[in-house]
Length: 455
Image (cartoon, rainbow, N blue to C red):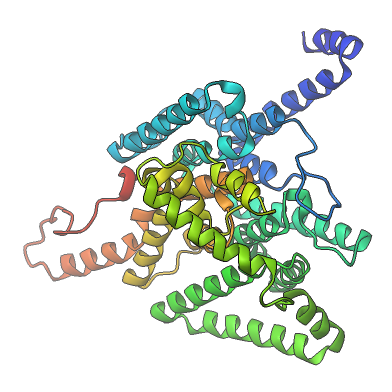
């Protein structure tokens, strides 16, 4: 049947035949990968070059909006539907997840009613924002999967190779336009870097060092200072958690890596000149600084006018910015989404960030360093830091990663420190003279797990 259909499509519409072949291969890939298909699908859609490869400004995608939105929707939904067909429930019923589903459903209906039609809704920024919640809820089915480090490593390697190719072809320009904009590229690297380093370090410390060095070079070439701030914040968090856990070997490794990279930059004149050229603020009072001042004043003013649901249109602030300045974006993702969707829309968008912060707080509280959970939380933190300088919530690739990592982490966050609890219970049982097993009850005031995570 597929052969007959393919022959007819090749005769009538060759492009449709190619699309059908891609869909068939994707379905077979889902069957072979199982639960690992979810992170691979998310990362693949996130790193694909949907935009012109070499350009000097942000441009429209090289594919139609319907194709891009279909890929964004298929990335979480296809593995989720396949998993539903193959097995039963994975997590317990959760009132928090149900409320989150109703929240995003209400926001989607609100956007649809305000834009007066489905065609106006089919834009990558709008679909990406709505799919933060959809991807988050789909990801909760894959909390036990171990596919994120491998998928992150593959995705980061693809980003590095594409960036290297772009730099060779145009050494004087910024790299990263093939994913939409150089800052988007830097945010993707920041999101995938922790998981990729985890995968590489399990195989070779030399591989991990090479990956970190290549990522640093590409972050320099994309000239995204917000991404460098994100990496520094992640390093500070990792160092603080490792120090709290008393893991001084990891602290020495982090410190050695920073020292080696700093010495390499300072001792190599050409590399030092390149870093100074790419990362220096060339124009202290440039147009970007003026636009950032406009962004803050505009966002705060719009939020004061419509604080609940905002303009009810994702991307509205970008359009307003384009009419008042020549830059079609607000230089703060949180102010941008608050102006467009109000405080309710902002709360919905930052739910994955809240999950990451809760995971990090449990790591500090219990003095543990679960590498898998830390890689997901740090990836979310990296995107959250970049969002403070960039309208990240309207780039569908970042929305997919944010929702997927947050959803997976929400099912695992209550497990962080559980081994510590078990050790304490074992010590108590050893001192129990009765010899009877004491039932385990949650401690007073201890949360049972955000969004009903199963642990």
